[in-house]
Structure formats: C-alpha cells, structure tokens
Length: 211
Image (cartoon, rainbow, N blue to C red; front, side, top):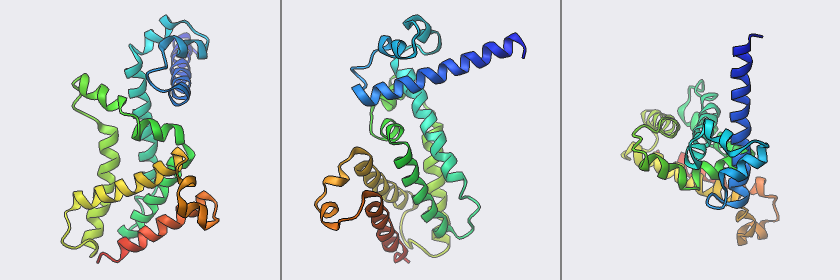
C-alpha cells in the first residue's frame, strides 16, 4: 500500500475513533459537560489532534447527525423495491423501529438533542440533505399510498408528519427507558419489544382504515 493511501486510511480511522468516543461521551455526560479534552483523552490523543479534524464540538455532533441520517436512509432504501405502497410504508415503520432500538445512542443524538440543528442555524447552513432525504422518502411513500386510495382528501405533508411524529414518540419512549414505566406497559406483562411492535401494528391498522 502506498504511503499516501496509508495516511488517508489512518486519517479516516482516527476520525471514526473521534466520533465513536464523542457519541459515547455525549450520551453518558451530556453535550455541555463533554469537552474536546475529554474526547481526546478517550481516544488517547491530544486536543490539538482533535482540532485537526473538527474545529469544535458542534462540528463533531453535526458529523454524527449526518452519519445517523445516512444510516436511517440506508434502512429505508432496502424497501424501495416493494411495489405496494402501503406494504412499503409498513416496512419502513418497522425499519425505523429497528434503527432506533439497535442504535439508541445515535437515535437520541439525531432526534432528541437540539445542538446539531442549532449548529446548522448558527452557521447559516441552508442544506440539511440527510434529514431532508429521510423525510422525502416518507413523503414519496405517503403520496404513492394516496394514489392507491389511502388517506383520501388529506394533505400529503401533514399525513407524513403525523406518521413520523407518532413513530418518533413510540421510539423515544423505548430508547429513553420511559416505555417500561407506562402503566399500560406494566399491566400488559409483555416484554417491551413485543409491546412496542404490538402498538405499532395497532397504529398500522388505524392507518389502513383511512381509505
């Protein structure tokens, strides 16, 4: 392997290590309590090395935000081949749940923490391609459902937002640990994953009746 290729690979590995360490610390200590020095100590490098790749914490969390949405989009893209739009919508819902439950730390970073969006606003960034792309996939699927007779007379964007906000609420309850403290959850005697999927299926049934 050429020297330049080795250097590039080392650079990418270091950036990856920084993001992994930062994600852990942000979730363990919170954004404000996590310093660049703490991130540097976790990867066993100097703070100066961190600044070679990221100018501040906002840039680090922005990178994590981008990474999270790219992963979510990859979960959605798998189901684009499903021709029946309502079946595709259901599959996307399950994929969203899978993404949240398998990546709870990342889910909280991209959907609960406010700092990434504050960074976008403060820096005057007008493009938020990763988040927009994920939502656009949902809007396209809802539009296809309407062409097939679902959600008649309803505005596409609003239906899409209702679907996303409901899924977000369910996944946030699960990833935050609050679902287990809900009275209905305790009374059901079910494990949380079964309860969560049962709730999702009931929601799907409600959507299916909007024809």
